[in-house]
Image (cartoon, rainbow, N blue to C red; front, side, top):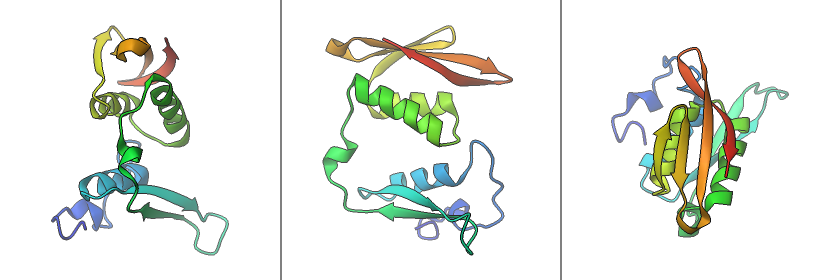
Length: 139
């Protein structure tokens, strides 16, 4: 797919990985730009002779998997994703809110997300160096 779309980042082995550009993020992007109902997962093979991580796509997922989520599901996904993956917290949360079509505004180092009848969700961040990292959720 990377070659078809002329995106060298998906087949160039010289890409330097970092906290913001890593295998999980590249897998998410690949699934997103595929135009199909794809998701990814991985297997940790560190304790096998292969010594690494195997990433794979799951295809033909039902449309419901990609439907907007409610406040509780949003909160659960935020917390579990931040616990499980290395990612830019601010970018991830803002992108998820945009994808979910949830209106939000910034107040200092916090996002106030409007989930309509379910109420508002306050997402607090704290500054670590030049980054804003997730601190806690309040509703």
